Length: 211
Ligand SMILES: [Fe+2]
Ligand SMILES: [Fe+2]
Image 1 (cartoon, rainbow, N blue to C red):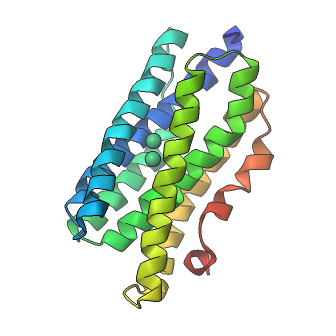
Image 2: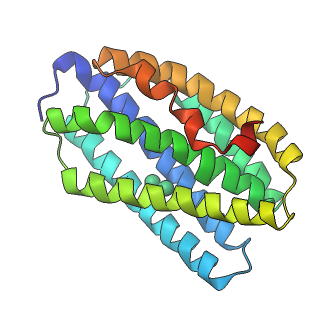
């Protein structure tokens, strides 16, 4: 992989962000498995938790391969830590719908938008783990689709309060907006089109959710 010396740090920061996101997704899916009644849903979520753990290991591997000597504190992590606190609060309240919206819909939507946009750049640079990245993208699509189906069904059955979730969505989306801005500057440092994907993020969130 050809990574220019001045690209190493922004690329490693980006991957550090993705790794943290995978750990959050892993913990969230494991906790969600205890909140669902359907055994099939529980199996899916436990499988998701295992896959997210594998994803985190992949990103850790690429970071180690890049081995930037000194990684300055990434500005991306504080909004992601705040995001984790909100998700953990929803788990404590056993609010499955809010966790599905925050994790599978919004956060995985953001992750999918990032991965899809940087994939071309990674291919161009001959990055390692090409096959793994394709498997990973495929799995993320499945996680996102699962959350979307469960919420759509709950909505059709009248088991979900869209107004309340919309209010919560604003807080989560506000945090992703902070992340998007920082990511955009990282993307321009490594010469990837930042504006193109920044607008993608909201496309992953259903309309009823953003109002
Ligand atoms: Fe993942
Ligand atoms: Fe995922």
